[in-house]
Amino acid sequence: MKHILIIALLFQVSLYANDACTIKQVNNVRKGPAGDEPLIKKLPIYTPLIVLEEQDQWTKVKGVDFEGWIFTSLIDRDTDCLVILDPKKPYCFKQKEKLNRPISFNEGFKIIKKDVGCNLVEGKWGKQIWLNSNNIWPKTAAKLLQI
Image (cartoon, rainbow, N blue to C red; front, side, top):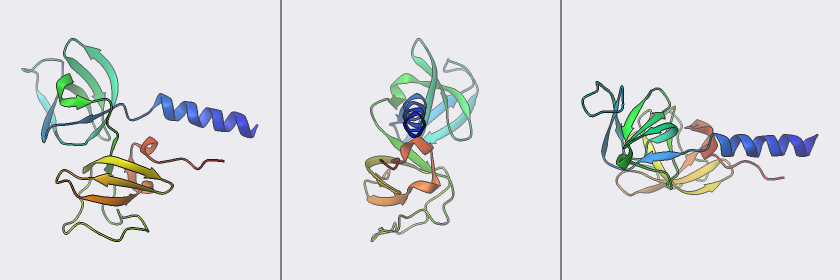
């Protein structure tokens, strides 16, 4: 039974893996797959996205609090990233350095290294810090305990 649970968890992680990240400083998400469609949201760099559908040069994506269409050249499917959900206690227990500014809700970070309970990430200005894995989206960006 224990092996079935582990296999199910691994399958779930691969099924809902962080499919893509935004790669430009400002990335527009639209209601439909066209540049003249209404703007839903502007995303910062390193916003994680779950890819739902692709159509021509547009990709339908889901984020932590939205769903819409983004121009495909604004995302990278080979980069792992995450956002902070609750900025009150974002840092990992092993964190020595902190940012000299508050981290905001839904702020994106590129994942450099995953560790149990923590992620070494890089922000939009290039500074690397360790963030708590219990406070992120998507949860698949966290490293699972290996048995």
